[in-house]
Length: 418
Image (cartoon, rainbow, N blue to C red):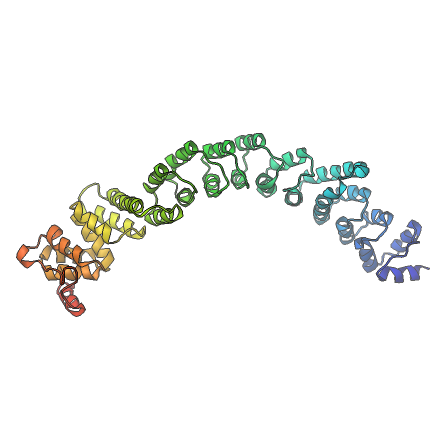
């Protein structure tokens, strides 16, 4: 008879008449492959799975732990299993079973299953708790006390899924966790929730936690009040990680836009202009203020090294263009004009100084041409920076074109090499 049973077990359907005693006799034979197959089959009798839950092989116990047909008594045994993988597989299964246990007729089964879930949620192995957290993070079918426990777990990989996704955490819960958590990254998880109320956003912002506030600013569904945003901006200038998300916040007021433009890079101001679809005049005003601000940061005195640092900073920020050079000329900032032109022309600043100090109109015109700037700027550079005598100023051709050929420009610059 045993041989026939084994043959049937190797088939795809177990015999309905297989009794517990028959199964016990079969299992005592300890044919590993057949036992593993039996432990994983969804049509295996509950009594057999209960017996297999205590099998000496962890592979067999894992099969039972994964098996939705395992009785709650088997799950209770496996919740204390010494093998970590067994408890991990059990955690994954138990969390997935909960929605199917809602009907009143299964109240007792649900109660016992929830006790297993609570035990696993308190498991010493963080990975077991993490599996539970990942599986129930969006569920409304779990007791709130288990959610609360996981939300306050000391491991980020456990608490983060619950903090970011659980619908069972209200504003009061989140505010308490914000005030008490010591887990690095927990605040960021809260800031990334699908919906963040103004009250919770206030609490996150007040922590000045750099990654959390950056995540809050980047979360378009976070309700950040304007006074809260003002407090963030008060600190944002020195925190580069906040520059892009604050500049890209939707629905910023004109007042806030101007504040942000006062410290972020010009490339971000340009992105901000596009994002908020600002009109041309306002956009030009914001960008002009950015260039002036970058210049002012470097020019506290008239020393050349200060001008060099300011021009390089502007160049690296993508703010160095013809308007920047024109503004330096407008403000009579000779050193700034020289260093900006040197960077644009890809020439050493000492060579540019020699050209400017030569008061040679043709060489200065060639210099501005090499920098990729217009003839109007060349005229201003001759007149206002180099102070070329009026009789020696090179004027535009047809009112705005350069009067020399490219080769002539190269030749004029060659006189100042070395």
